[in-house]
Length: 135
Image 1 (cartoon, rainbow, N blue to C red):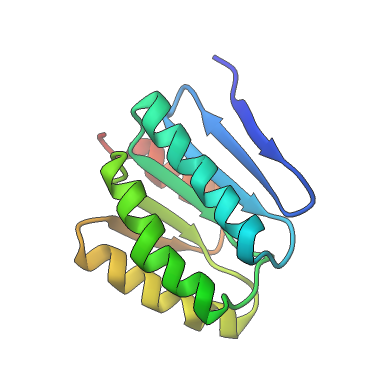
Image 2 (image 1 turned 180 degrees about the horizontal axis):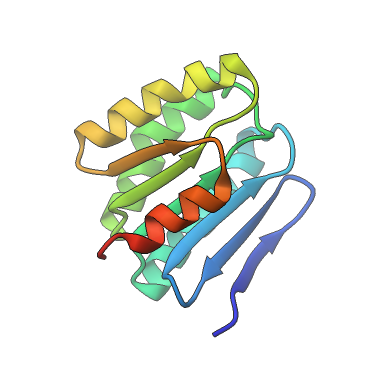
């Protein structure tokens, strides 16, 4: 089956890998606020629609999240994603060191709440890891 391009704009591309049942976003630049939230909410819709459990976040070109985005992601979006069936997360970390440090909070928060998390610097390795996991 072909991948489904759910979203493609100046901020991000969101793809659903139909054969692997993986939601996959790639940020093209720093993204925040409503744009950031819309990308992640679109991914949750994919989890629900396709009964997917795996998510690949390619955040290499994003930067540090604002306090508002961090709060929204950890307290609002996370519950939506987990309720939609999210279980495994492959995170390709940003090039920016401050953005990497900012993501530690998310990695710790989500893993303590049952999400299997692995951190990568290469998106192909992240995709391979997720693909090898059982649902």
